[in-house]
Amino acid sequence: MIDTKNVVTDAPLKFTEGAIRKLHEIQAEGTEDLAPYLRIGVKGGGCSGLSYLLAFDQKEENDNEYLVEGIPVIMNKAHVMYVIGMEVDYEYGLNTRGFVFNNPNAKETCGCGESFSA
Image (cartoon, rainbow, N blue to C red; front, side, top):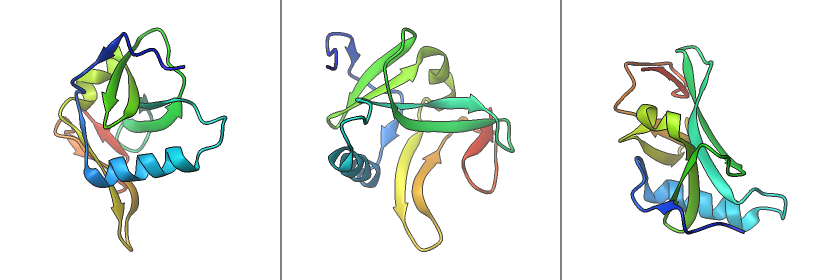
């Protein structure tokens, strides 16, 4: 069960209409073992130093919780500074199909768009 008493209303990032649509599709297709929260953040690695993290997960002690278009989103408090102002999109194109991260905090990004340096 999702705890809504600690939900922050303003998420530090935005999801486009296409990203929200795809996330709702994933939730609708999900099995019972799909975790209830969408985790977004960063982790060490990738060709530019940090890579993006986007996966359904369980809430942890250091997480902030947001509600975005009916989707419960969690983020480690330490990751907020890396993604503040970021826009997450979903592209359906021939060359690119998947989630795309448009991050104004990224000083450098790699060609795949999945890693960056801050």
